[in-house]
Amino acid sequence: MPKVAIGARTLLYPLPAFLVGANVDGKPNFSTYAWCGIVNSSPPMLSVAFQHHRHTLKGVKQNGTFSVNIPSIELVEETDYCGIVSGRETDKVADCKFSIFYGKLANTPLISECPVNIECRALHILNLGSHEMVVGQIEEIHATDSCLTNGEPDVAKIQPFLWVMLPTNQYWTFGKPIGQAFSIGRKVKG
Ligand SMILES: Cc1cc2nc3c(=O)[nH]c(=O)nc-3n(C[C@H](O)[C@H](O)[C@H](O)COP(=O)(O)O)c2cc1C
Image (cartoon, rainbow, N blue to C red; front, side, top):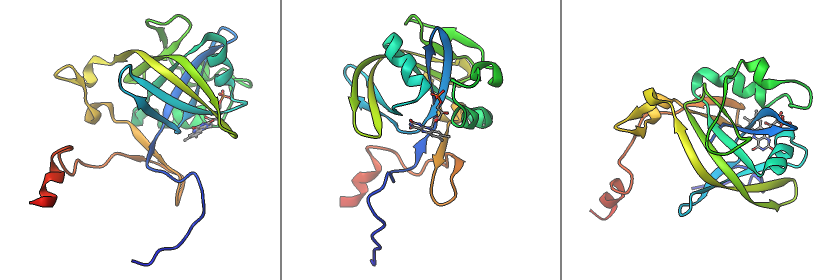
């Protein structure tokens, strides 16, 4: 199979788009993050990579907590908006007409309109160069009841979406299931 070297770049996709929130100077602010992921299971932890000057990162450092909110496809405009303007310039909560609620952690704003809301305590901040990677311990998750099936979050009801940078820098919906995980691979050795 012929291959073409395309350089060392931040190409690892598809990536979901999340709304990460923190109170900054006492005011809720949310911005869009794709460079996020689960990094530990026990205790449950995730990471978010912030550029140093992000207003939201200021709030993470002020409170030691943050939230990760999973938007559904109905919120694609709001999600993009939160990724192109800074909370230093405008009140994104008012602009997007988000309803905010608070859960287990003080000073950690959550977006009602997002079907899944994850509350995190910031455990580590690692300066990697262009970005600071915040590792957060997941303290609680809230899910909209209509997005659950048998008490578990159901991706078909949540309808999250992906940010696909190349080739056309667009948001994509999820496709269809193609196989049972931890099972279909057994076919390889017949
Ligand atoms: C789809 C998308 C993904 C993004 N992912 C990241 C990311 O992973 N890390 C980051 O620092 N900025 C990311 N951004 C940019 C920030 O969301 C953007 O600079 C935002 O305006 C920062 O807002 P704030 O200053 O209020 O925190 C992304 C933007 C978009 C549209």
